[in-house]
Amino acid sequence: METIFQLIAIIAITVGTFFSIVGVLGMVRLPDVYARLHATGKVGVFGVVLLLVAAVVWTPLGWARALLLIALLMVAGPVVAHALSSAAYRIGIPMKRPVRNDLEQK
Amino acid sequence: MKDVLQIVLYSSLFIHLLLTAVAVWRVWRGENVVDRLVGVELVTTLVLAMLVLVSLIEQDSIYIDVALALAALGFIGTIALAKYVADEKLF
Image (cartoon, rainbow over all chains, first blue to last red; front, side, top):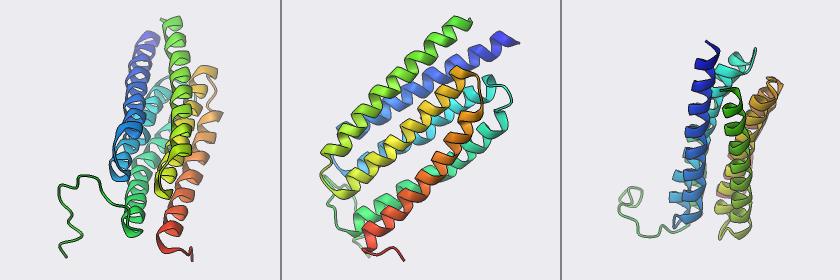
């Protein structure tokens, strides 16, 4: 039983770290603020939540708090991304190569 | 199997440290204010990930409480800053 938990923890940590790397890479490489918000959302939700899945499985007596943190991150991630992108749009930060701008056609 | 887990934990912690350095450099170089805000949010999330990793390494679940507090406060702080940036006033 012990090795199964360790195996789950190892897989969750490696995949979570992979998502963190992809998120930060996207944060550095993408052209404008809106695309960067798209990248940082991944780190916050996928990276940390998978690490918390490992924490649920492996840390003693910590599984309830880890589930609570998973729920908080699942709610907080998109809300922060929406708040930042609406703030960016409202102060007029231009989009590089916009395909479609729904807000303008109003 | 246990030492494989230790190796994975410490390498993941080191990778997250490098990612935090990249994110801090990104905040320093950000073109506009929302860029820097996004960078700060990313740094908060990476520190959160490192806290969870430390709680896995130390086998002590007190660090998850610290991560919980950081997540809640970071979330509220970023929302308040975004509102201040958008409306030039907070209340």
